[in-house]
Image 1 (cartoon, rainbow, N blue to C red):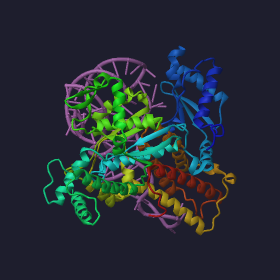
Image 2 (image 1 turned 45 degrees about the vertical axis):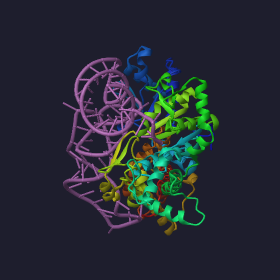
Image 3 (image 1 turned 135 degrees about the vertical axis):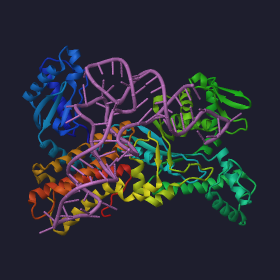
Image 4 (image 1 turned 90 degrees about the vertical axis):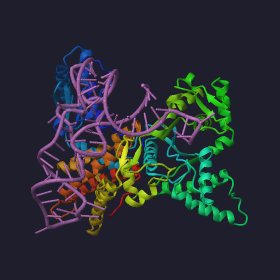
Amino acid sequence: METSAQIPLSQSDLIEKSIRRCLEALGLDLSDQPIHVERTARLELGDFFTNCAMVNAKNLGQQPRQLALRLAQQIEKESFPNLARVEVAGPGFINFFLEPSWLHQSLRRVIEQGEGTYARADIGGGERVQIEFVSANPTGPLHVGNGWLCSFGDTLSRLLDWCGWNVTKEYYVNDTGNQIRTLGMSLLAHCEGRAVPEGGYKGQYVAELAKKYLDESKSANSSLDLSDELVAGKWAGEKILANIRGSLSRLGIEFDVWFSQAEIEEGGATAQTIEYLSVKDLVYEKDGAIWLNSISLGDTRDRVLVKSNGDVTYLGGDIAYHRNKFLVRNFDRVIDIFGADHHGQVASLRCAIQALGVDPSRLEIYLGQMVSLADKKMSKRDGNFVSLDELLDDIGEDAFRFLSLAKSINESTTLDLDLVRSKSMDNPVYYVQYAHARIASIERVRQERGIDRSEIETVDLSCLVHPRELDLIRSIEELPEVIADCARLREPFKITNQSRKIADRFHSFYHDCHVIGESVPPELTQARLWLVEACRIALAISLGLLGVSLPDSM
RNA sequence: GCCCCUGUAGCUCAAUGGCUAGAGCGUCUGACUUCGGAUCAGAAGGUUGGGGGUUCGAAUCCCUCCAGGGGUGCCA
């Protein structure tokens, strides 16, 4: 990767430096104040603007508009690369109008940096971050809601990795305790032809597993037991986990670590953690259970860590697990992605982590709001849910990833399956992929017609002046900032929006500006070929982060 | 009751406190003898849930009320 010293200043940096220089020239001291330079909402207002005159007018004892006018005059006098003119508008905005050359320079930079470097940013500084997501219990296949958050977690991981973090993707496997026993009980009920008791798992997959379990238990040296719920539950859990891995793999998701809760418990980590908390006088016994005195940590009530039957609660295990993340494996930062149904546990976990001596700002927890299907409840126990695999069979992996990454996870979602299926051809993912297919098609035609592509250094990009061309470059030029914002805010969906915007601008360009053809001068063909290549790079980066494929034909 | 999320065009969603609140879908009207029509151009569509407040400026921040979803287990 290039060092920052080698990367030329961005256009907005150039503008900010100019503003600061001119403020100084006018004898105004804002050196300790931030100066915001932003893109305008509409081109009639120029390419960039700053609000610094309005923000600082009071401190400097001036009228905002007067200050803006003085500053604008000075900026025009001193000027800076690519500046056309400066205007003052409204209550004191300073709007910068640039020559198209700034876009030609941006385009050249995209090509020079290429697919591996463009739109990267070293924000993370190599910080070691662990991202835990999905972590669905191995008591049934992944459902659509699980898959939804998988997409989020995976793309967030790719994004942070892309922006300079050292990422470990982890799945916490809840392979012990009550749920596994319940699963085993449900399995054995099926084996014996009994109805599954209340609270058990009733899905069709349990019946299928029961059939297999019966077969395997009959073989000569089988250790499977038709009377032990725990043995049956663990066996079924492993089978289900293998199925879950398969579903994840379809979505292109590979975890670095599969972390077993059973290992935590059996390795004594839970006992150690409770011991540590009890040294701090944060643990007590009542009614045969072990409680965390979380009220003293600011929680609304105390919580059970170990039940009276000896089972560790989910919270108890999770505290031990997080102690492992922070204090055994020493991650700098931990990001947990849970469903909103885990909300009740967040405060307690935070309290406990702090009690263990971990700076709570190192723990980020994101709760994805509920994803549901119209007319369907998503309950594994009742077996009344649409599995992720079923939906993927229906609409395809790309459509699913794109759809699930199209809006904030703070937004709850109700999927109308009929709608999703029937409109699958209008799905925006095809719109974006179609842009890529058209790009590939241009390349095929170029080769068929034996048109050589000149080296970028020798190509004059200044002939790109059509509004469609300039709009397309703008959308590509915005990508680094969009990606950096996504990484900082942990909001991948903005990349999805930007990929649509780029595809949109490309389709308009494609329609109005032929790249190859009798009526296109050779120099223009060369410049446009590079513009198309830059667009391909931008789409490859965006869809790569989203985990969506780039078809050459559709 | 308390905690969290959400309320923006008919629908799904955008908009680091900025200038005239934007896209897609749907609706209506148009467009290729060049590289892929899964495309493109245009039109219509809004009291940003209500009411206060802060600010030069509020969909955005604060208070309050209303509506929807989730949580509030010795389930996970």
